[in-house]
Image (cartoon, rainbow, N blue to C red; front, side, top):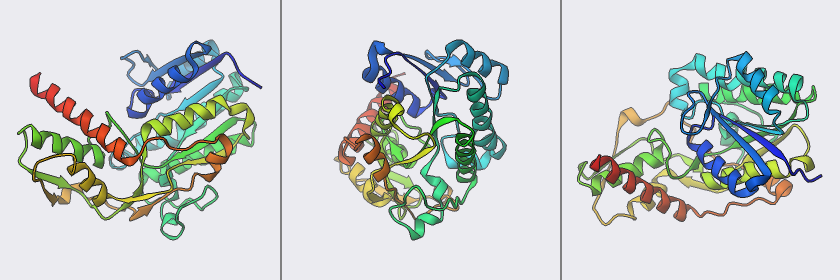
Length: 321
């Protein structure tokens, strides 16, 4: 079945991933899809929508009658989830349950793409690498636990008839990501050093951890392709979105620094160290590749160059303002 008139509702589109997803969907579907993007605060072309507001959400679903919903709502950084556990439970677990029930009640033929996280695997990733979708969930922090809870809630609702896909993206990076994450923090520090705004000393957290790193543009391409082929997929399916390749953070930092002509010293900073940080997390995306013939297009070298370019432009703009 080819769906010509998609109405795609993006929840939580105000963040890093949301803006990239909007651009991908607009390019992918053009005039053949209506795209409605919401954010908690609205603004920047987004409709204000709080998932805890049951009446507002019910009205949105009743009026729009979406064919697909992408749920990006959540706390982006694990450290923030640790600082705000009540909010993490509300956004990652309670809100998806509420959303799933409303979909079943109002738009039962709608597909829900629930975006979770590869961090739900937690300790299991230490013994199984790369990790597959049927591995045991053993999260190690508030972020992972609440993401796992939401993932399981949506899976249970699939048994009640909810048409859904449970997505578990691993680390993804790219232009315009928050400095609270390691790679954009490194890049912005390098850009500030080059601009003379910071001494030639780059502060870091742990550089020993190994991560499966994807370009955010490859991640949202997977979301868009899943929407395009949703009618060919099995409801309740779980898909890792990952590269299958592990990168030590120290190696990624060296690659970023190699983009600069300056001599830069690297110094660890205790305040940047994360408790319960997994030493290794690598995903197996064989199921996704098999289902939709998806593969990453951006090399790690291209992604890091694009991040450095964005960081330099942002630094120049900030300096001149």
